[in-house]
Image 1 (cartoon, rainbow, N blue to C red):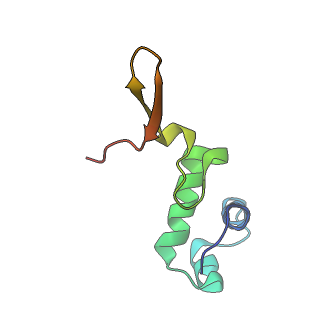
Image 2 (cartoon, rainbow, N blue to C red):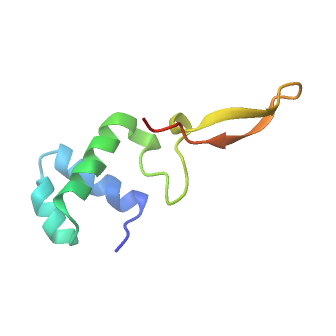
Image 3 (cartoon, rainbow, N blue to C red):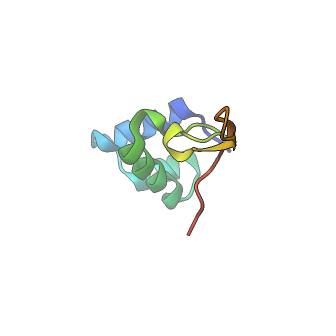
Length: 82
């Protein structure tokens, strides 16, 4: 099952507010522990930019690549993974 931005944020905030644990939420939602752990990490690192959705990059993850240096028009590509 896929969970949307609002659900993930609610789960993360409950964990950060010490209302529950990562393990408890992973069991309740039926997802792996590392999935919920990654939601917490992502939220801590990016706050409002967290969980942009399937196939969408957060603004800080996108890199502008000029297609035409004269007009500076271009498109977005994700940063290269090392």
